Image 1: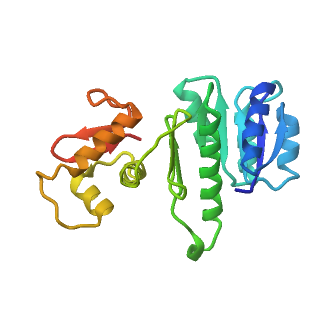
Image 2: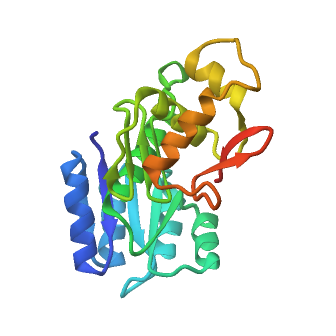
Length: 233
């Protein structure tokens, strides 16, 4: 995937790490350790996305984000060591598109960057050229539809095609309960389904085992008894 990314972080090791991972994915990187140089870049280079650290020596990332939004609509991802909800709200209110708390997993940053750039590119295409979402990343989970690759906490999960399809549907519908019947119809393409059909349940159990997800206290796939399954937003 090609694109031009601005990376701003006064912690040199972090900025360099993000640069290496994104360059490996084919992105062109403009990297700075302070806000002034970053803003000069914003005003002189055509960018596809910016990654901004909140705490910088000369100005904070919120200020840079606000100035970017005065003239540009490319995605902005905020990086911060803070976990306060107010910082997240502030960033999103000022126009940030995503928010990542340090310490983070580099592969998850890459996945989120890809998802934002793809969404931005799709948004700026004519309607006839738009495509559906291809990458979903949250809580250490990265799932990519085109390659059928699924990574959890930087460990690739070996999912069967059926298991991948079920997990993709649940991730695509995060925040909504997906009934067993709906999963059965979408994955197997068959209309016949009865309440005593445990096909979906068995596959869900296998997915949970591979994710090391607890049935009693699940982090990802939750059972809504009598209805279906749900992954929270």
